[in-house]
Length: 377
Length: 150
Image 1: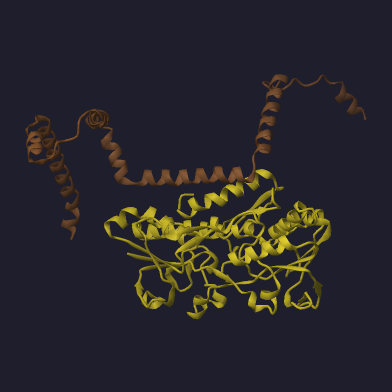
Image 2 (image 1 turned 180 degrees about the vertical axis):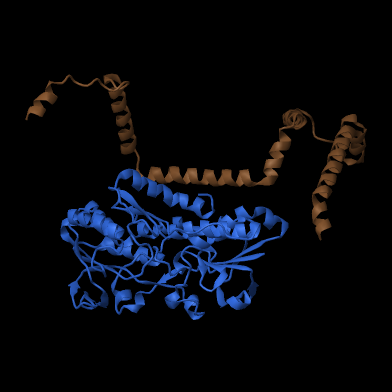
């Protein structure tokens, strides 16, 4: 049986390693082959970018060679897919190579699209790329005081990022001794300060305590870079000195180009994680259109289910598990406190007060990530 | 009001078994220790410890899943292998001593002949020859399933 994993991010790497562990005997005897196609030979720990934006991590510590993270039995190619031919059970890559498969896993991830809002690229700082995070840190370092605006586009990667960056800004300016010279205003597109209701309930008193102002129902329409003013679809505006953005995200362009899903999100069965209409095509991580957070932890829990199911299909001919929508997110509530949110399709998160031990747990996880993608945790 | 008076008139309940002043003092000590450890820690220390633990776990995982290493460990547990390892270690130490005090080889055809006449040299060649034939036989045996399947 030929298993092909497209995408070498968190989800793709975990699922490939999990499969290599579960099917080690079948891989050794040649009954199964496992191939990964990725766009890069490097793997980035994306949550670390928030720390880079505040000078708490250096960018080089976020990378490992992708090949070094993979089990030896996985055939790895840096050759991204250009065409998906699902009915013929094959893909064609950028180098025009053709890979046939029996089971396909699509884990291509997502990309930010700040260019969809006029002025957002030129006028704002963001931490969703290495270059952006470094630029944001330099902007923060040079900031002497004034009005800081935070704007959020939806959907976006890492659901907790808007509140985390707000808490971090508060702590950063406080540590520099200029918090009293900074006015922080948070803008959110729906009628509460976070899409997850219990996160909104928890964050609101924290914002009040920190003196962070907020405006809900603020859907960013454009950024007037020259006059440093943000305008909303609701006809409100705010003048800023420093603009921090959480840009909206879309699925990868290759998904849209191959018409696999609107806006790059593939229609996915919420329990089996198969692509609608294709029982031999699995989708995970940001690539799905599921109503769960676009976060590494969702990809992790989905990968466990898919790996178990593919392995059981190989061994006994049928899948054995369903995904329950589990997501676990650390929430950094500043530079030395954290809490977490755990939820699934049925149960909303129940947030506990932030504390230092949870912050250290998050610090530890920043290192443990490398065990996690190897399929060990 | 009456009930309040009744409650206050009752004798104090006996303390929970095992929780006396000495135990509370120990708990307080423990809390102080935890607080002191927390205060002494920093993000950097936590990061370094976690990184070391993480790499250790990865190494352990790779070692324990490496079937060749596991088989080697199993083989090394046999008494004759352990004797051989000990003999090898002692031979290395003795070789180091002999090389340090002995004079350099003469070289040339005469030197070769003298070396070959030495019974120890013959015994060494026999050992290497036996080792080589076993190694060759084992390698052939391990290749056998592949060749039969192809």
